[in-house]
Amino acid sequence: MDRGGCQMSGGGGGDSSGPDNSGMISLEDLESFSEDQLSDSGNGSLEERETMQEEEESGRLLHYWQDVARGHQVEVAPEMAEPIQQLTTNNQGHSSREHVPFTLLGRKEKCRELLYEKRQYEKGHWACTTMREETYEQSICYGFMKIMRYICQQNSLESYLGMTLPIVTVVTTDESHSTISNDVKVAYFLPTEHQAQPPQPTDTDITIEIWPAATVYTRPFTGPTNEVTIIQQINAMAEQLEPAGECVNDSFMVAGYTNPAHINRQNEIWFLERPRGTRED
Image (cartoon, rainbow, N blue to C red; front, side):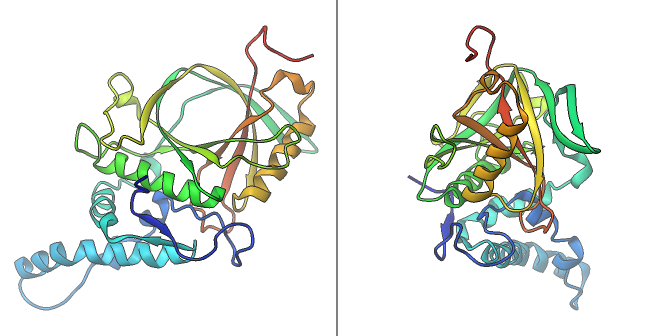
């Protein structure tokens, strides 16, 4: 399987050292690379500087991403240079990123601490790819690289589609919620303008899925996402929800909103409410 130009360099997984072992590279890593860092004052005419920038920008962006990736124990392959450059060219900043729309149905707090929210998400199109690597960190890395290339260029419109948040990963666990399956789905919500006619991916490993409307219980948490932290968050959320039979018990979602290199990375664990008539006693 083509892993989308993303290769692991090192062991990965929960035994790695450093502030974040998630192995996932987000679009925000790239967005943190400002235009000032890309510019080169140099000498010569404006035309010469523009020509030089056009020739060197792609290489410098790739090198920057490779430097960021090493902090995640990931190697970014040279063929990622073009989608990275295209993403930067179309970068419109954090405030322009569309969030997956939802209706807040309720929330539970204790001593002013948010325990969870109950939300209603409507039916929508998502671009998804399922990875089956040895670790969760490897799967989300390879999967996100594929999704990023779809967003940037590898689609039937051959254009930048726009970024939405959160990027969602779907994981399954055993009955006791102690281990995560190697099958990890990485999903990207299509922006509103593309919901009616989703651009088709050129990568056959990516499919466009229609996710039905769903009631979701969400719990925020900060820090890295790996097998250990996800299992901890699933069990913490399960303790808050009563009765437990109202929610799907073996499939969960991890929603990521911020750069995984950030010390206080913002995430959520999502539990799906079972449709009426399928709930356990």
